[in-house]
Length: 152
Length: 89
Image (cartoon, rainbow over all chains, first blue to last red; front, side, top):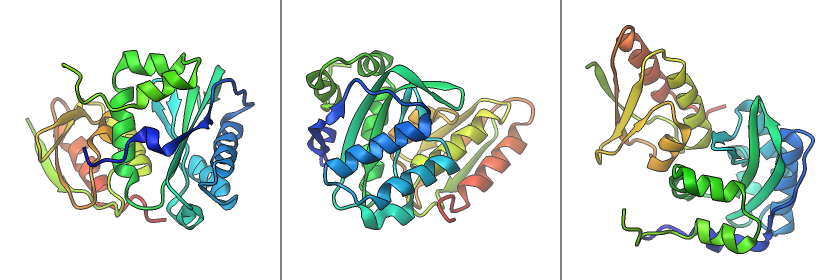
């Protein structure tokens, strides 16, 4: 597979498993702050993420949302990166309960492949459940590791 | 079964924003809609995860199929959506 491995974009300290947020915009801001802390984006990307969330919800199902910036925010991306924030108490996402946010910074067209890999994982209800209930960074890593040798 | 083939107009492909707008519209269509890529992979058009998993790029052709009352009208409006650059704004 020529695709960039999801795990190569995810630093260990970008996995935060015990977050709380008052609403979905708070959760998006926290994802943005984690991307800033990872050195992946400028502060202005956080506004682009909020703007994106305002236009269309980034909820994708399975208790997961994928906050990311608008096209206009791409100039503030220094390098592609992911962050994983878990909200054990859940965050109300326009009537849906979200317990995991995967924040995405992507400058080029590479994020189509990225999202595709992520969606493949979440389409497996067992893996989605494991992500929602992960208690260690290792669990998150192993879930995001491509399982090409799965005998399915 | 009515079907339509359309190429994706969104400059960035059928990813997050266009994909959510499209799957929301498909969910409201009132009839089950299937989206099939040229490579032959099919998903439920109302599932954003299904759509995202296909990683459909700009200009790629997809086929939409639906069955039941209002299938033609539903397909027409979904085709119109995919023929629009949903990322332009």
